[in-house]
Image 1 (cartoon, helix red, strand yellow):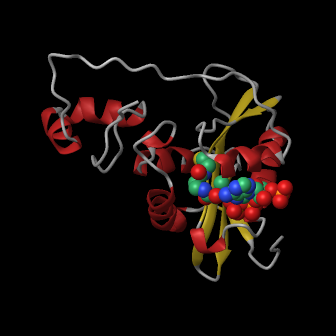
Image 2: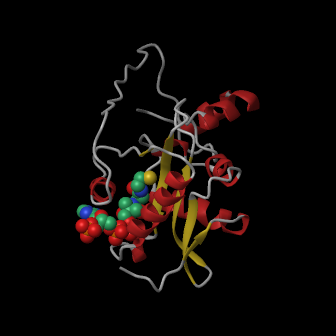
Length: 186
Ligand SMILES: CC(C)(COP(=O)(O)OP(=O)(O)OC[C@H]1O[C@@H](n2cnc3c(N)ncnc32)[C@H](O)[C@@H]1OP(=O)(O)O)[C@@H](O)C(=O)NCCC(=O)NCCS
């Protein structure tokens, strides 16, 4: 527990640091982190669900949670989509407090369920969620079949080949990250 680290609503001024911290801690080569991008953060900023918060050490963003009332087409389900704590600040209960404040906001906004997804090897995230009231529900495995006629393109080659409109659509659906550095392989 570290109550000396305040947790405050995320604002526009936190955007750059949130984006950078996400790039530092998310492995964007695996689902569900492939869609981490400026767009992902900005779309959350654009909602008024009160479910996006940052943990601050002075002016430094050392953690964040991004939630929204949008999960698939379920109007009464909410989504805790992104959570991260800076490596040097982990293990102090900051994520637990971020989960709590986010879920409180989403329930207050009318959610009957809050959903989150955890990559199967992410022990820290699975422990965090299970210790904070989340129980495993549906498991989705990504099965991948590579086109044998297509050599796998590098991320840069793939990004270059896409027209801007297509690129934006892929970013929005999580198949390409905003900085064009990584594409989904799984
Ligand atoms: C997952 C993450 C946010 C946890 O942040 P944190 O501030 O260190 O977590 P907390 O200190 O609040 O710990 C919460 C619980 O998870 C447990 N936990 C945290 N890290 C753990 C780890 N590496 N292994 C096992 N359990 C862990 C803690 O023991 C604690 O359980 P407890 O309440 O029973 O003691 C952090 O590890 C992180 O940023 N990871 C990279 C980003 C990521 O994968 N985000 C999740 C997907 S969006």
